[in-house]
Every structure is written in structure tokens, then in C-alpha cells.
Length: 177
Length: 101
Image 1 (cartoon, chains in turn red, brown):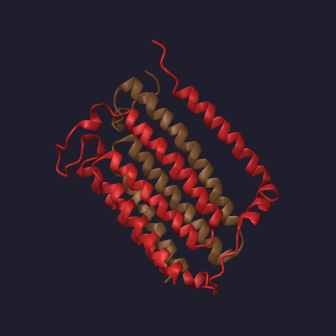
Image 2: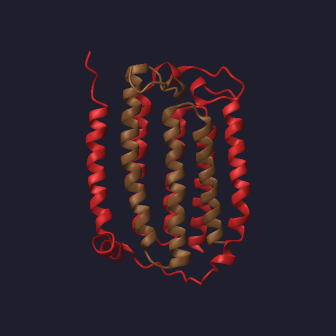
Image 3: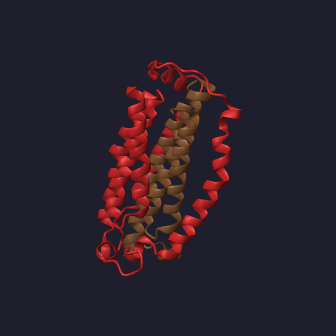
């Protein structure tokens, strides 16, 4: 019962905030709505019994990536950030206009309709198993998997993070005049 | 109600919203927000299949690596955005027409 309430709340938070990211006028509000959507996805992970992934989602995304996005928005404010709406949808000029929204909604509708039938019939391919309400802790098993089966990907991801760190520092260094 | 289908529907809606954001926005930071939404949709699919179909934890591992790659991608992408703003004084995507100035 508690899991179902958590599932409904998380699903509503995720989908509602994601749609708000798409339609809001201000890029700063867009970042804050993305924060809500990521928290909702962490709740969905919790209802799936993925406790470690849920906590990692909150720590890395909510604590790291969205803060980075907010820093980038504030550092690149400029004249687009303050400009008021002039066009039909009431959006700032850098946030898109009615033609780009029409194209995006068309592509999204086509994608939705082509995938909806497959998803609604997914239980034919993967019949639902009966799961109880038990949620065993996954941290020990994930730790064993990371250093046994997936150790190469684990080490390569550390190299990737080091490369991204050095690359970001080099790209964003102050410009020589 | 809590079945594989409902999780896949939520993931489909997230993916489409991310796609609409990426196509319709003209702000580079907003396009990066759309990429984050799409990566989260894929990650949610992995964890849902991991619980309802395969019953092991490989989907969780995939999801963790997606989070790592998303963090690296966001760091480098935002560094490029800041550099672009230093040069062009705007973050409108239509202004990005040259590889070097």
C-alpha cells in the first residue's frame, strides 16, 4: 500500500515536472522543474527496489548536475536571459518559437503512437511474475558485481571521469586576450 | 497497477518530453536539460526490466554507468557552453555556426 502511494506520487511528480520543463518560459524555472523530475525518478527507483541507484541518483543528479546547470545558466545570463517575450507563445527569443514547438510535438506524437502499441502488449513477451513486497538490500551485490563481472567498465569509467574533469577545465579556462 | 507496462509508459513520456525539449528549444542549456531527461528515461527502463524480467542486478549496474556518463557529459557540455558564451555573447543555438572564430 505504501509502495503504491509512493509510486503514484513519484509518477505524477516525474511526468508533471518533465512537462513543465518543456513548456515553461524561463530557463531558470526549467532547471528547477528538472530537479523535481529527477527526485521523482529516484522515488520510482525506490519503488522498484533499487535503493543504491535511487540514492546515487539523488546524490549525483540533484546534488551535482542540476547545480552545475544552474551555475551555467547564471554564468551565461547575457541579454537573452533578461529579454521579455515577443512572439506568439510568449517565450523569450532563445527559448523557441511556435514553429519549433510544432516540429517537436509532431515528432513526439509520431514516436508516441509508434511505440504505444508495443508497450501496451509488452506482457505478451514478458509475462508478469508475482513479486512480493520484500525489498532486499542491493548494495552488497552491486559491490560484488562492480569488482567481479564489470570491473573493466568500472575502471574505464574512472578514466572517463578524469578525462572529463581535465577536458572541462581546459575548455572553460579564461580566454587569452 | 505497478507493472512493467506502467513503468515503460512513464519512461516513454519522459523520452518524448526530452525529445520535444531538444527539438523545440533554442537555448543550449535547455537542450542539455532535454538530454538529461532522455538519459533518465533509458535508465528507468533498465531498472524496470531488471526487476520484472531478468531478476538480477545487471540493470542496476547499467543504470549506474549511465549516471556516470551523464555526469561527465554534463560537465564537458557546460564547459563548452560557457566557452561559447565567452566568444559569442549569446547561447542561442543558431549562432553556433563555426568550429573556431
